[in-house]
Image 1 (cartoon, rainbow, N blue to C red):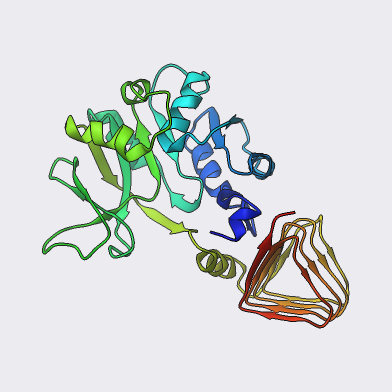
Image 2: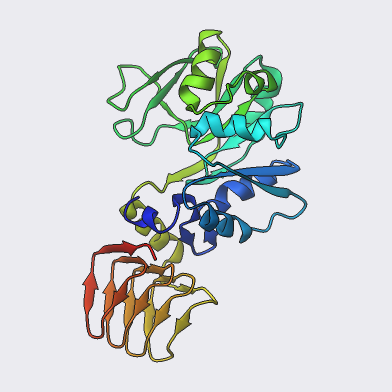
Length: 299
């Protein structure tokens, strides 16, 4: 996501309805959990601010900051060691950098009725050449996880969209050291014949590159615009199908079209920004035209 991620963590990227991570947080809250724990490391203070924007009624929201990068499995173990994950029952684990429109019902039923150490939520694959392929056997166990590439003949590839249920047994076995989920969680579960998968209803959208991000914002906005209250947009400025994030200044006569301006960027008088992402300590000069650019600089 560079250069945007030099200014704001990917899960904190602004969307018309709040930061990207809001999708995962709202999904977690809808599952009936009492506490949601969010790991933070890169630009941790900015990530904490994004999380604070999300209101989860009846759900406790807790941060688990990392003083060193723990990796996806290490971060989970750290939250466990801090006592943030309770002491019984499975844990729902969600990636915070994608847009999830899923229900946890099928995942909950599978994990509760099978003997899985870990159960993966899966979707019919969207693009096997772009993302890894998960293959299930007849019993709903993961037979293999293949790298991106054309599926084999008669193969039914599935996509992992970033949601899983982790048993207390698997969680307790995690080492308290940096590491990643595929090696620390999935491999041991698969080797013991207890890595399950269940096909979900719903949708997922990756926000993995600046172009992905701008495209999904455009889809959410349509022909409308969204302007955060902390920004100053002159009455004479023209904002079309754009997202104006926090602490932005757009001066009179400026035109912003099909773009995202965020994190305190400044668009001066008469400047024009189109089909672009402008973040952080970027100042578009009076009369300057920015078209199809991704500009970001940390303050």
